Amino acid sequence: QVQLVESGGGLVQPGGSLRLSCAASGSIVNINNMGWYRQTPGKQRELVADITRGGRTTYADSVKGRFTISRDNAKKTVYLQMNSLKPEDTAVYYCNVFAAWGDYQSDDYWGQGTQVTVSA
Image 1 (cartoon, helix red, strand yellow):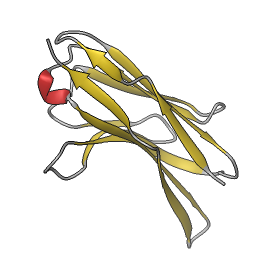
Image 2 (image 1 turned 45 degrees about the horizontal axis):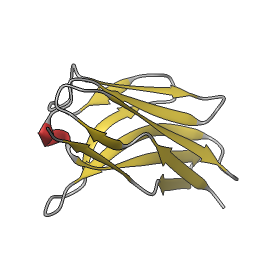
Image 3 (image 1 turned 30 degrees about the vertical axis):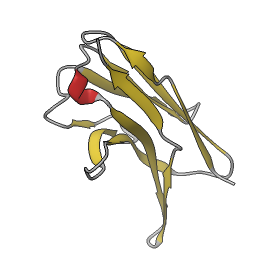
């Protein structure tokens, strides 16, 4: 019933920019952290950026200074602005939402993934 719909991926030249969006819908409440992960063949999924409900951010060293994560709590949407893209950024990007409430209940949701390809 909970859905995370990603958009914004595509093909871009080195040095270009893309903006990813991920909108949560359905019976999801009490969203805490929202983030972006990426994965390439033969590699484990890695954290790209994360943002707390209060707006505190965390970035992978490889993207720090180039990517910016933000969120709109009213729209239950998280964004990833990617600038100065490099071929090494090529991957499938996955949106992640973590929701928790009370002392015991929590849920972890993933988007369907969107392909980002950086190539000349």
